[in-house]
Amino acid sequence: MDDAVPPAAPPQRRARQPRQATTERRAEILRAAAHTFGSKGYKNGSLAEVAEQVGITHAGVLHHFGSKEALLVEVLEYRDKEDVRDLEGQHIPDGIQLFQHLVRTARMNVERRGIVQGYTVLTGESVTEDHPARGWVTNRFTILRGEIQAAIVEVGGGDVPADVAAQAASAIIGVMDGLQVQWLLDDSVDLPAATQFAIEAILTSALLGTGRPHPLR
Amino acid sequence: MDDAVPPAAPPQRRARQPRQATTERRAEILRAAAHTFGSKGYKNGSLAEVAEQVGITHAGVLHHFGSKEALLVEVLEYRDKEDVRDLEGQHIPDGIQLFQHLVRTARMNVERRGIVQGYTVLTGESVTEDHPARGWVTNRFTILRGEIQAAIVEVGGGDVPADVAAQAASAIIGVMDGLQVQWLLDDSVDLPAATQFAIEAILTSALLGTGRPHPLR
DNA sequence: CGGCAGTTACTGACAAGTCAGTAAGTTAGA
DNA sequence: TCTAACTTACTGACTTGTCAGTAACTGCCG
Image 1 (cartoon, rainbow over the protein chains, first blue to last red):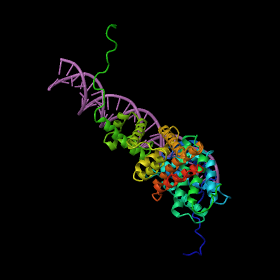
Image 2: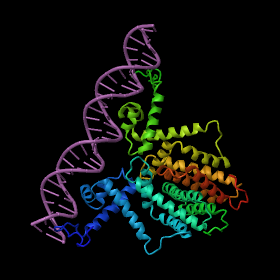
Image 3: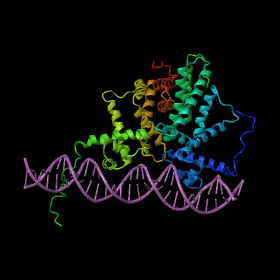
Image 4: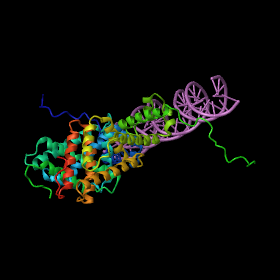
């Protein structure tokens, strides 16, 4: 390759860029879409409802995102970026701190019912055939399981067998999600308390035999 | 008017009963609907698709059930009855047998992916506003929690505090549901093993301090 | 036991609505 | 001036639900 020439002179003519306010506009639409898909589901939430929240028509939304499915994909990416930004400054928790972080998240979630509902509805929907969010949800689970499994092994000082750590990791994610569903349907379920109880229980069992004391209390 | 005649002669005329084959016909439709709502969700599954499976038109389905929502309700009731029939002969498990039953269910579920998917999709959908299955799902959770909580107290010989038993009961249901979602999305999740591991872990923690040995192994 | 009244179990057509997506025209900002 | 950012108007595909009509079945009357 010839690297001597300056990188490809801009064949750009004039104002080919989006306007300045457009970035924020798109973000507005993404937040509206997250809200709609969250409360009604992806299939059942309409572009018109999303558009109305930002004061435009559904065709305006399609101008920005091309299709409903593309909008969903960007919503999911947007949420990922937000999650990362929330953790900015803080180092990514690992080891025992990860579990403390999970319990803290459950406590926070009680104050963000809408977000929890969105996650729950979308996750449930994603197991249907050819759902556009299926890949995203599956990937999310895979990453999360990996992180939690690694944290379990780390806390156990390497003495926890891989398959036990894997089962415990799945179980921790499962119990968090499953408790959220019950809590959404019935406020009498104590989401933070049950989450903490279950995580401690699963962690204790996974570490049993390593001779280490329980690290959460 | 001549009121001398005996009070309102039976207005019953003739054949008022459904035909013989109708019961089985309705059951066929219910099974088809369970399949469709299970794989596509209630909102996204159409009457036409249900009808096609039994070789009639969507109007025929509506003839039998009146509305889509009424069909869903009957599907749920039908499934309940089937569940009960499955347990027939066997006494309803309680105490430690309930937990063995739950683990056995997880093992069986690996062979009934469709049913698990139906349960998962419908449960996720039900947390949306005004969903027609919401009451059914909520009620199901309430009953299940009560049974599991009672079993925990029983196994613990009455030494387990009510709130601990309640949290453990929620957690056990939650982990079963949550693991099913992960398993549906990713076969590499070992549903039976992780379920058994988590139930044992949660049960152990709940019984801790009662001085009883772990009852599952 | 034959026939007919009344009902069931549908079909096919249609109503009324929602939906995503397209195309063409308008406005306003860089 | 050029074009991004819309709107309006529309299409076609689907939805559930209604309705009138029809064939077939059921049970009673004579």
